[in-house]
Image (tube, rainbow, N blue to C red; front, side):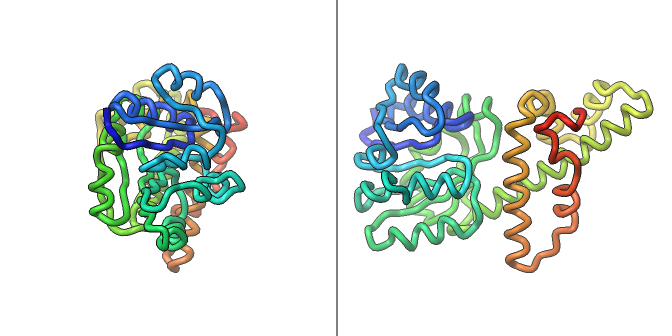
Amino acid sequence: MSETKIGFIGLGDMGEPMAARLLGAGFTVSSCAHRRRQAIETLKGKGLIERPDPGAVAQDADILITIVLDKNQTDQVLHGPSGCLSRLRDGATIIVMSTLEPGYCQTLAETVQSRGIDVVECPVSGARPRAENGTLVLIAGGDAAVIERCRPALEPMGTIHFCGGLGAAMTIKLANNALAIGTFAVLLEVRAVARAYGADLEALMAVCRNGTGNSFVVQAWDWIAANREALAVLALKDGELCRAAAVAKDVPTAVIEAFLAKPWKQIGAGTVEL
């Protein structure tokens, strides 16, 4: 068993299997209920230590991992009244795995620098099945030596791709997600064209999977269709974050603007046929 103690906050659809991978690798992992208890109960059966709040999760952690929905939740977890920063020991490491704006971890690092706390940004790419089998893409940014020190805690969850200093990994994650969201929007349209002409949609997807139109979105279409409501929320969040990042640097984003305006935004309400 590793002597490194990990505090893990955010046991959602991705976080739960990621924490399970760390427990399976022999790490001591603690967490607290964030939005639901089901994941806590499941992971306690695998050795997870339950704490009452984020601060208590952080107090014994060598590495604190957060993977919650967005900036507001991350701020609450870190800076809230019972937040992690109030009790995280000096010299610990924070790994932020949520997808946030590029400047978030830079600001966080400045806040904790005087305490000798290192910050790594490491958003992930891949669906829940890849989280379960430990094959996520880990998009890592920050000090290369710190990331290397965290390698034993990261590799059970996937493959590390070092992207540069703080801000680089979040930028690359947003670019990756914008590409996937754009592919999704186009695929909705071409499926509608095929349907209008009476073409077999299974034949369309088989050709795309084996032809030049192949992509993760094409390969995972059945999973996307089954989880469309939750994915729509995340897709819209990340698409708008990418647009905002581009605007901040005066980069034109006509295509991103176009697919953010498409009716597929309403997919969670069931108004778009897959």
